[in-house]
Length: 565
Image 1: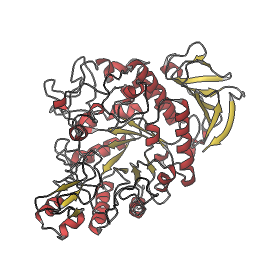
Image 2: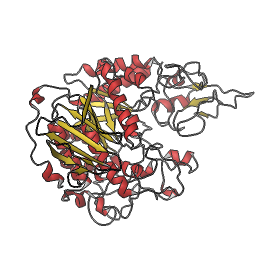
Image 3: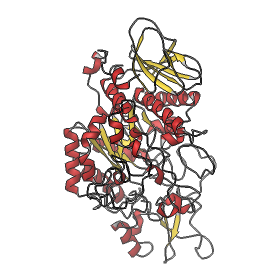
Image 4: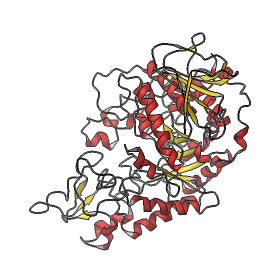
């Protein structure tokens, strides 16, 4: 089946599209990791000029918004998430004027811009922290952070046993004897959100970028800002809202203030939370009408490619978001996790976050097939979708990075046990047969992170004219998704077709069937194929394949269940 031909003509299915809906409820958001997107000046690092040069590519892909990982000045102790100035652009990426041009030029193409904010911590080179280091213990400058005396006979032990997310203690001692808190790297001191200047500063940062035309912000580590002022130890099984530094109830007042600010604009700005919580009901609290608009669905991202868990994850997300009338988000990858093709090519597909795996085989052909099916499945679900750059090319994890070239603090702080996140952050291949594959105009410039030598077949150039490529699957799927054959805001109704199949209808005539089992399944009668993630076998959907169908008759395929809103 030629994917391009299969979707060439789309029936008139959705007269309801005249109904106005907020753009973010159904948006496709493309994550730009700017260091690795495209290098225009030949220094081996991606930049804003590189993004601007490829805006037509992003428009043709069919995305509604770009989310930029931090583009601010940073010493890069954690790939830009250690920010020293929130109101400027890192000179390696460009200038503030270029950022404003990029925001404007993208909007002219119908693409909005979302920027990262990182409210939990700053860089140790931020002016506030430099001031705190220069001030004596107990000074007002240190009250913006978490400075404390140590424990032990001479204060030689940390104030408590909290551990850094990157490994090791979450406390670092200064020469004057005091310790400061950093839930991430020592170069990322945590802010004290009970301090009014911290609150005011971040509201001003939001205004700064909203006034420059960004459509919203993605909030990094959104559940970590508030800490227990008593610095109590982590209990083994804390009650909801009582963890000493995660998901504390006081957080909601912060985001209500942000929502009021976001809603004050003629086009209200959007708040997207990176909220990692296993409790779906606790997650939904952040999505109440006066708080965040959406939050990342990490349960779906980390879900194994198995029909039972995958269906349960989808059901849980839809059910938990419905009471607060918030759209679910569907995410298969980002800059922190193993790329989908690699993850789905392993026997255990549930582990999105890398650990060292001696002798663990990866079947990239299988992984590619499953990644295609998963992408088409995610596109058909109600809500918004996030696409991490390179997923539309089917890039695998770059796994053979030499130890001396790795830069992620997770690798460094684990002593090499955890390979870290460098493998999913490798620069994109655009064209050509050898590195840098068109990423940089200077073929001799060392890239900030090396590309594998065998990526030529994965480049944009190699995939553009191949109707069966991953790139064209994304282009076709996202085009149909934008045309919404199910109608505006159509709910999902599950269809029964055995334990190995995820099947649902939307809007009466649209059907999605994902076959995760080992046996091919016959297409239902009275349907027409819009697009498929792989070739059909006669009139059957083979294993690890997703198809989109429209009903051409009045038959009811399979057995319908109750709608899942």
